[in-house]
Length: 447
Image (cartoon, rainbow, N blue to C red; front, side, top):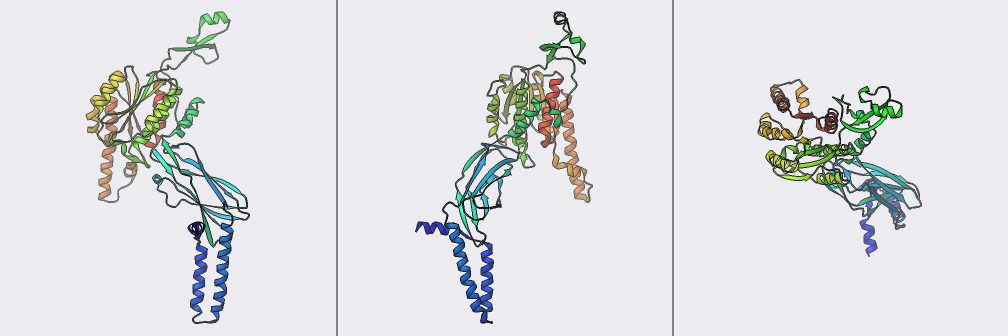
């Protein structure tokens, strides 16, 4: 009894069968007017029943006709295309058509994910598909369903494979690896990060090397030259062990979305990449996340697990929809960050009045630290600013957009007036522009 119930639960009729049944109904309806069609209809009726029985027997004769599995990396990268792999194996002795349906996490809101594959006898295929998460947290994948049908294509047998898995979605570690390879190979210029002309020379001695054409003659080491009887020069390197803090605003202003990612997600992705690159550059990365209170704080160090600690702190960070309190940030930094450091403040100001309320706190931070304020460009206004208005309503909208754009520029000028560095960037270009500023500050010897 259980076996019969299992068969009925996994047996599905195809569109081809419904079309065939519809034609039979038409034939039997016409048989009322043309009796000769009744015998023809009965022949096709019994033939259809035989084909259905044969098709079902072929599918259910092999208990394990189809085997399928899903493979994935142990975590997802937020905002990036993540590859997943599905393997399907045909254990039947004949050709099989399959319809593969994967139960994706609810966060993706996919209602029509399906893949069709045709497998020959004892053939195994492996294919990949990509998913792009736009939020951090836990992503729960469900079962893997495969609907198998023969060449007749009248019925389908459903195979359900328990492939339940939970994949955590972390800040964009795929971009982290990309920039890591570029930094190691000194090819950051390939992604638009330009070398900055050095102002002066670094005073941190590295080693003595042989003179080659192009070396600064002022760095010649005359004592080493006399010992080796050939020109030797001192080689200096960028100063190391500088503290680099990514200070991330987690207030409600950072919930604003651009291309499905919030400003907080863009900031977290950029913070992770910058922390990794600064670690490679022998600096000490640190992290502070705040809103109306300090939510997370990772002291700037060069321990082996420092990047892991920063990643875990950023993994499940979310906005709390509170008004950001900069006095809390100033008190925390005064107590915990005693050495002069580079503070990259990821925040956003939409109005000049909003900046002026917090300006005294930013000025206090700038007294003891090198502060770089990251402000986001509202790319949603670009179309309004460039489009020619066609009516009064569009003129009004464009005027308001110009006002917002003008205030953004005034905010930057106000920050520069008090000696605070500023990055004004589109959300999609945040990582590159932040790395640009970091390498520029190192080249100029400001950190």
